[in-house]
Length: 165
Image 1: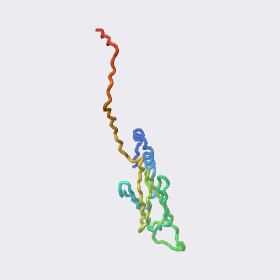
Image 2: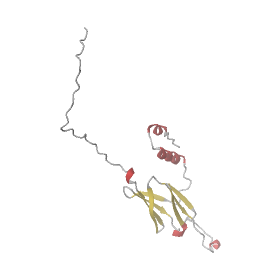
Image 3: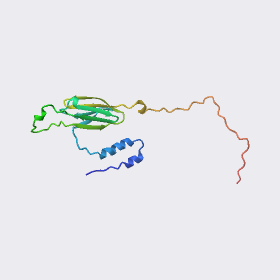
Image 4: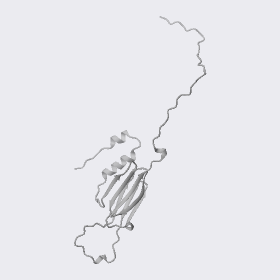
């Protein structure tokens, strides 16, 4: 059963969220055909994230990480060892096929590093909002004291006319 969401009310009542709403629209249209390799996305702090990807059988040289603007691309290409053509598998349960995973990163999120340990690729991410974009407190100025200044009153030169009844 497919559920369709109408984002039109959000477009009508929001300003500056175009990119987020476009990402929601794109995510709604995308069907995940391949869910390999499995991965977790973990929030480790207020501005720290981690992607844990199970890449058993892949060496560091077989993996490639690329960040292009707000897109993180993780790909793996496994080279067949020489002489492996003579091997006949009775059962093949360890997936070693090539893959490419794309992760849309929010603004100001950058990849800090990646490690491969025990078949787990760990990618560290950090959100660094520039100082000029962080919320700041704006002080409310008080009016300058007018001590010692006389207030002048404007006087009328003529008498007011009587009001007719």
